[in-house]
Length: 193
Image (tube, rainbow, N blue to C red; front, side):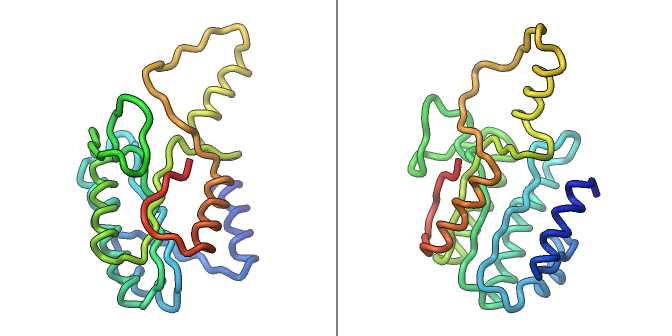
């Protein structure tokens, strides 16, 4: 664990919560961690990691979602909040909203959409949040990388792709959005960017 991860873990534990290390592919762990829980926040995902097989994306984003749903339903959880991505739209021409047709064009988007469908088919007590371009004060992300490059060589020209448009999502703002959606007991699909 990094120092930041250790600090975050301490904050979580100091708040009275416990941390269980495991995988959404492990049904036994999921059965244990969902006992007595009212709301499940499913934010785990296999993302754009390099050198992993398509099977890993399927195992985590589809089977893992189904496993957590099954454990949640058996435990009597009242709500299921599922983190997804605007990657379910593929590469659209222009702006998208929650009603735009989905047409994922890579394994990540395809498996996240299949995970969304599993959630919608399992329960009507769900909230699906589609995010994009996550960034925060810590960790690796596009924004921090560009800022680091710009600061390290202010006179150097940076070359980046110019055919993608998006709305970066600040992790703090996403946490507040999730909090409000849960408070209002919203259901359905929402963009959280």
